[in-house]
Structure formats: C-alpha cells, structure tokens
Amino acid sequence: MKNKFLLFFIVIMMVFNVKAITLEACTTEKMNALKEIANKMEFNYTYVMKENDGIKYPEFTINVSNMNKEIKVLIINDFYSLDYKEFVNKDGKSSMSGFKQGEKVVITSKAYTPDKCSTNTVLTKTIKLPYYNQYYEEDFCLENPNFKYCEEFTDTDLSYEKYYKEKEKYLSDKEKLEEKDEKQSKSNIILIISIIGGIVVVGGAVVFIIVRRKKNEL
Image (cartoon, rainbow, N blue to C red; front, side, top):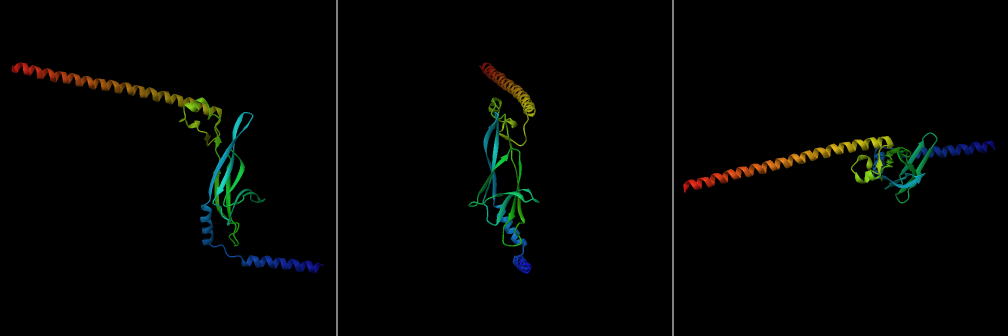
C-alpha cells in the first residue's frame, strides 16, 4: 500500500514538473502586450444615495469595462492570506458595489495566461471616492453655486466648522468685491459726466467764437 502511494505521489510530482517545464517564458514583449490590453480597460464609479437617521450618504459601485480574458481584475485586501475580491468578467464588463465615501480603492490587474506571465501584476489603478457634501442643498448653496463648498461632492470630509468658516470668508470677500465694483462704477459715471461736460464747454466755446467772428465780418 505504501509503495502504491509513493508511486502515485511520484507520478503527480512528475506531472507538475512536466507542466512547469512546458510553460512558455514570460518575455518583455508578452508583458508589454498584456499592459497594452490592461490600459484599454476603463474604470469609473456610480452611486446611489441612502439615508440613516436623517443623514444622507452615498454607496458607491465601481465599474470596469473593456475587460479581457487574459487579465484578472482584483481588489486584494491581504496579499499573504489571499483575501481578495474579483471583478467577474461578463461580456467585457463587471461591477462591484458596497464602497463607502472617502474610501481609497486599489485595483490590481494580473495576468491570467497559460505561461510564466500568469499572476504577474500588469496594472494597478487607485480610485479615491469623494465625500458627499451635507450642505449641498442648503438655500445658501442654491443662491451661491460658485462657492467652492457648494458642490455635491468634495475631496475631503467637510466639517460643520470648516464649512461655516469658509462661508463667512466667502461672504466677506463677496461684499468687499461688490463695494469695489460699486466704487468703480461711480468713478466711471463721474468720468463720463466730466468728459461730456468738457465736450459741451469746448463745443460752446467754439460756437461762440464762430458767431463772434461772423458778427465782426458784418
């Protein structure tokens, strides 16, 4: 029995060795070709708004398109424990949901080919998900859409203190700009009136001189 088991083990090892020997080498040309395929993939995200205790928040879905059977697209949580999630290729497209705002998602694309390039990393893509702005629908934001913190999403988690501090600064700067524009407008009006007045005076003087000369000629 032991001899049979030993023989079976030797045969298995020989099969694995033959397979390892017959695998084609991973050349630079092959890796470049795989990288070219990977670079054609497109990544984006969509979201749905949810609400908990009156607080709105987005749940994101990451989408991948232009996928190829020679590339595996993964989110590797722990390389050493092989903890990962895979984007399952369905007609060149795949999606994965459940991502939170502000999350930094690292997507790793690995070769899935019948040669020694298999499992080599071909492309790494990092997607930084934005934060939803809780103040986006305030009346102030509806009236001041140009204010930088009135966009629906921001790059940082916007606190109450930071929002109102920046809001006060924006209003102060806006007021100063309006006062400056008003002063400039008044200066322009005065300048125009002065020019018109000068033209009238000069025109009147010219007319007076012409009339006086005609009287002298008579």
